[in-house]
Image (cartoon, rainbow, N blue to C red; front, side, top):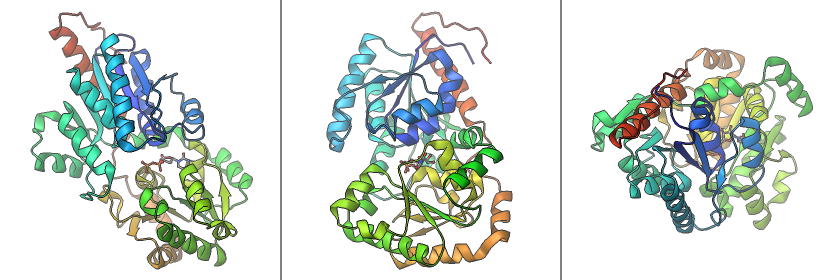
Length: 384
Ligand code: UDP
């Protein structure tokens, strides 16, 4: 790719999954990346520690975003991004996924006529109750280069009338990120010991989406099923997202945690190590649906809808909170070692581990071309 000037690519992000998914791209961009963190996730455990662990360079932080209502998050970030982009226009802007931070980054790029690249374009849940669905549709309309992770994602964009020449089929960056950050076998064994679990003998659960946490009945239903699975004799590890902890306390559901092994949110390597050896993962996370396909582990997804159908059937089942969760989990658990071997041998539907490299190349072209159009000489030496 053409070599890019220092801090010429603004990478706008704000949450844990964006840090994860963009880490390899930021590494490949090197000094060209200017990471701008909106502060949507301002919690040390979801953000600060992650930046360090993933080796992401010190970001420029926006203020007044974290913990605010959605419109305020988008508005506050947009105003500050506009000031940043006016003071020192980047040659291209990158956003990933479907967060409020990503939408603010996309709108700011659009307002200043800056080329916009969308990592993980074309996901669709067709669920209008999810704010993320609106965010991703809007970002895809604004983006100049849409990096679709899978052929299905590309087809979604074409069906919405996005011209084919704006779409690149890149794969999902999570594949290479999981491979790079999964601790080696020795460190994984030590981590399992530290958490008091044995390989293939425990369940790992995460719950944080509003549909499961903000409705006390749904939250109770999820925790009741996890409690029953623990009572059956399968240890259940539950790294608790701060929002979920707050909702559990507010709803008076703390006793349902008694049988679970509750931890603080885990570092990324630790989470991957524990997911790699779990007999089953139960989660409402988006990213985890992709990660299990690289780790080759079964998953029960507790959500009304998914924008990642590629992971369903082989690797995962989609269930509602309540007895369906318990039934699906027990069915997966009884399939045992043969099934785990089968899953481990399947390729991930999310790509071959080269997405970040492809996207870095596209950015080189995008930012380089724009510099030529503006008469500013791009440094056209070849980069690795
Ligand atoms: N994750 C982590 N530690 C945890 C729980 C999750 O590192 O204790 C990682 C997980 O591997 C995935 C990301 O956080 O890469 C998912 O973030 P989250 O569930 O907050 O967002 P979503 O993927 O649903 O957008």
